[in-house]
Amino acid sequence: MHEFSIAEALVTAAEGEARRVGATRITRLHCRIGALRQVDGDLLREAFELARDGTVCSTAELTVERTHLQADCPACHTSFPIIDWQWNCPTCGGRGENAAGGDELELISLEAEVPDEG
Amino acid sequence: MKVEVLRNVFAKNEHAAQNNRRAFDERGILCVNLLGGAGAGKTSVLEAVLPILRRQARLGVMEGDLATTRDADRIAALDVPVVQLLTEGGCHLNATLVEQGLKRLPLGDIDILVIENVGNPICPANFDLGEHLRLSVLSVTEGDDKPSKYPLLFRNVSAVLLTKCDLLPHVRFDIAAVTEDLRRLNPEGRIFRTDLRTGQGFGDLADWILSHRRRPA
Image 1 (cartoon, chains in turn brown, yellow):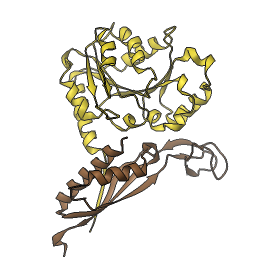
Image 2: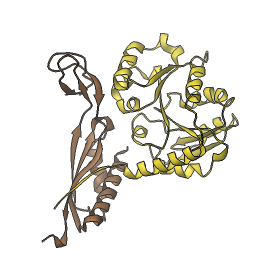
Image 3: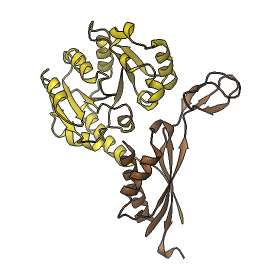
Image 4: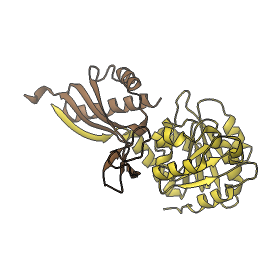
């Protein structure tokens, strides 16, 4: 259950950004989470709803962009995602190698209400 | 308005981890984070490898558990300085908990600090504690599907310890397939095969850990 740690960290990060830009309300958090992090989307959403309570994010929505471990095909040079532990290239059937990514855990952007924005 | 952020969600933990690493580096301490599922044999690995390591280095151990001091008691029986970190329900250690634990260890008298994480194949792999080496323990009784099911546990680690290898004839564990999966996930990682019955592998493991010893900054 690392979802609660992630939800808390997201809210803390958003609070810091809100102070930085003078926002009174955060309406959306956009984050990127790699499949290797094994984050359960429903649990994360529940945890986020608890963590956002009483903060500048109290009504914010959470958007999660998912990424996967990526491999390269040495035969045809296609880059493809490893899903369900399938390491064969979808184009030519070659065995993928040079696995990279899939462990992202990033807050990408926020939508914020800033009073003096005009 | 849209605010571009792009920051690591665990920036706070990373910051605490860097503080821990600095504290280790100032004193020349090598820190090892030992990970693995419940029952993989992490504490038994320590009971086998600490007596070898202690011939050449001064040791300290941090035991992470949800409850009880049973693991810390096993390490204390070896006469190695140990602190028990209780997460009280938390499924992983984080760098701040470790930072607090460091205050209870005689850091000036330690060359190698081993942190045994909470037994859990998922969450602990997400948290940098400030370690220099990350070791994953996988017992052959857990099954050969574990690298595909818990890839993060095996991806960013310095080495994988396959434990209980004396049971290989009795369990379904395709060691060639596991080795291939580990290589794909982690081409640089070392793989050690160990078993407690004969002591196989623990000398090599100790040598490998000792080869990473550090000097004070």
